[in-house]
Image (cartoon, rainbow over all chains, first blue to last red; front, side, top):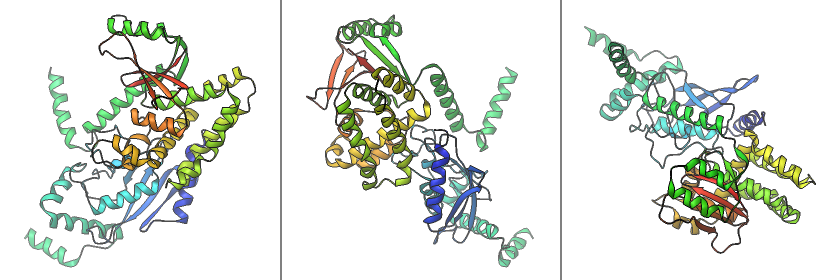
Length: 180
Length: 270
């Protein structure tokens, strides 16, 4: 039985390699340790995160898939459902009963027949449609609600940073003008 | 007092920090309570006399009366760990224990189980998510089937159900079979689901996840999935001196007898 988590993770890795969902790459950081994965998530089209490639790590518990993994972005990201240290806070990463986050009862929860793929797809929808009710990052939730254009500007900066592209010149000019 | 004041301020400033938030403290406490339960109560216990329940209610006359009534109908109780999986664990243990004494029924049960993975996949479960649970379930059934001596087979059953890895995988698989049964007969079961949740939603939230407690609807579907009947004896602080019995499905001749106390199931023996 000790090998069952490993066996499942290997099956999931194979599945993700054979049928990768669009815009997502994921797999073990190194093949010696299947309990630590890296994922690259492309910002969904038509959203303020479009074009960005966001790296994250997934950490699996020894009793996976009875318990869910943890997920943390390893780049700078500003989003209502992501803590400022990158930890992702969505319902599918929690078993029902772990309710202090105040998720809606209808939200998708972790169960042993969920999968890494389902988690990553949920994260993509979370990027596209933040849930400002359960604020892991209160500042981001507030800005998402009250000042969308500022939120979009920050997102754009982060997208460019993940791609290693410097800020657009005109924004640098604006920034200088504000200072003077 | 000075120290307390300081802690208070720390807490306040920590609340605005992402690292130590209240939600996580609550979860940590919940984990601690769960650990205490799992350290002290086996997944499935040894046989105990029904009268031994008295110890848990020494000052509660209503319960003591009801235990007296229960003891007139049953001699033994086998306790299970109260971890939210107790119905599924008790039910599958009890039914397998019963089947060990009836080789023909066991073989029939085994044959239905063998084909059950296909049923799950046809219903839309992803093969790689059900495979390991199915394999473990079949491995356990095969192991029990191959032991000739009933006493030894019962000992093996007890060991398997107290090995956390195997025991939990047996629970998961019965949860999946129950979910499949609910979804197969969704027209019927949808009448029992409150709110505007679909049967599939209900299964994803209340049946498939580990540690979710079971209700009437879980029991009905589990019985139907394994083609058997169960008698549940309800014991609570309600009026009357007697425990109340319920057969599921109604009118069946039950193979498994369970004791229900609010929030928990144990196994009963004549």
